[in-house]
Image (tube, rainbow, N blue to C red; front, side):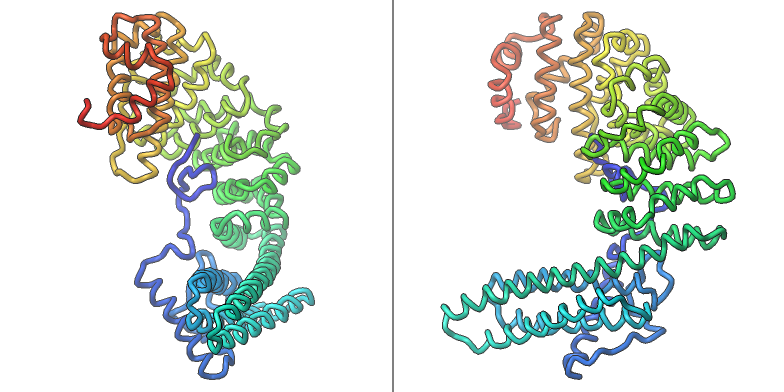
Length: 532
């Protein structure tokens, strides 16, 4: 239920201090970098594809965040890997369009890039395994084969022959892509192993900080690299850091990296194997840790309890520490000094309410409703629709409990829910618009559930919730034309109408309440703005 902006894998909860992705750079700088790579290939073609080594002081090279310099093997792999992947995709597009001249020229360029990657990485790493050597040979053979067959296609005019040759080119391209993927994975695995060994063996803060930073940068390259890191012991090494008092200042960075790795199943499994949940509980419940450290621990909890990841639902060790984790997270919400800290803590609580129903009962006992509702009036802690999304998620899941209704009334929660039904995006970005839709939908769901209690229903009618629900049903622009919001509002309106039918006009009753839900939905979803 959390789709927030930013670079985390915890359903996009934003990261503090996140480094830029390799390719997310200034457009002019990016053009200069690409130009260097393209012109180098042209030079190589003129020189019969003989590789040109990188100059040590080359200014046009891509710089990977956290890389150690121009000769860093990771930098070379990611730079060339991105370029080759792009070339493979483009060749496939041109092949589908039967643009044979472009297919051939791009195939030659692809060969240049592949040869450069192999030679540059060999020079930078200064050693190569037998398996890598075999795949390098297969890759270069397929590159030569692709260049040769595409050159022959330029001489063919017969469409039937070209059609059969096209299938051959397509198969060669596919095999080449597989060899490239295998080679890149082997090389990256080797570099990750070196980083993990370095973290595991280091007792120096600066070395560990630098190496952990490199590992975090790799996690931002996507799930495949996170899987490699998890398989090669990255989770084990990072939790080792988080269990050493001498590395306390590195806990936030290590935990941030762990949260990214745990977006994949292998990461969560490794976390459970090393009693990672117990370590997180110890950090969260220890007030001697900084707020930043506890916030990052909350981020890991949010990731490993995400309802969007099916494998997190089998984290049996979490149940053993759930009560103390929930207690610590409520306290962190209450004492949060910034919106970011509150967001991470509330996101973890929101996910936990999906993870196990016992969590809702714990939250009731801990007076969490009061903490959350008080925070809503504090702009320093709750200032974005993403944070309000977490709060209303918790309220929606807690509202299935009968006791929740009395607590909501006592804390003037119905008025807050009424305000959430009017959530509007400020920036208009797709992520913020989607967050506002979720807030409206969950607010309506919460209201429908709570309105089982006649006192809540009467309070909602007194606060004109029915009028707002009718407006959301009839005016597509008010709900950003969201069908999910429409269904939730119709359900809430029908629940309120069952308790206080006098709050409805006849036309509203006949169109929005009396028909079948699907008929009311079709009526409202097809309404034009001029109808209102």
